[in-house]
Image 1 (cartoon, rainbow, N blue to C red):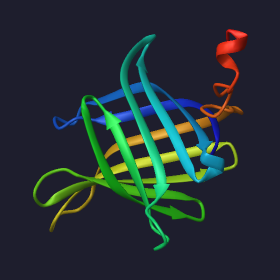
Image 2: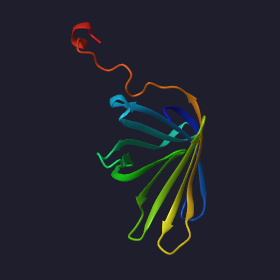
Image 3: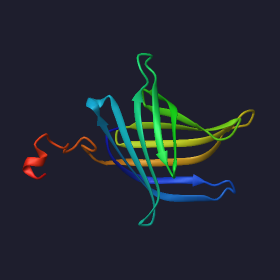
Length: 154
């Protein structure tokens, strides 16, 4: 999953209209791989219209994981489940609803869907992302501040 990814994201609005964005993601390890850092950006042409940042980490000795996500002035911590071929996480979307995201990663392909799930109703797709891995990255661990940075001017 580590690397730079580019493709499309389709967002289905409440009125049924669909907005397609150019989507980029960069994913990298921190703390020796114990933590995963993700930045997502959605572009309408060359204009940035969506930006999200997340930290995925284990919750402790119980073997569970969580995602701490930040976007559009909001933040939250959500359960995150690793699967053999990807991952799943969900966010609350009302008193009896949530949006469930399921990602499948195979080789250089990352496919993710988001479904609005309301108690007693069929799931309704509200998001679809299809990305291709375009490059390696050593972000964000690249070029840390060295202990002698003040001496060398870097």
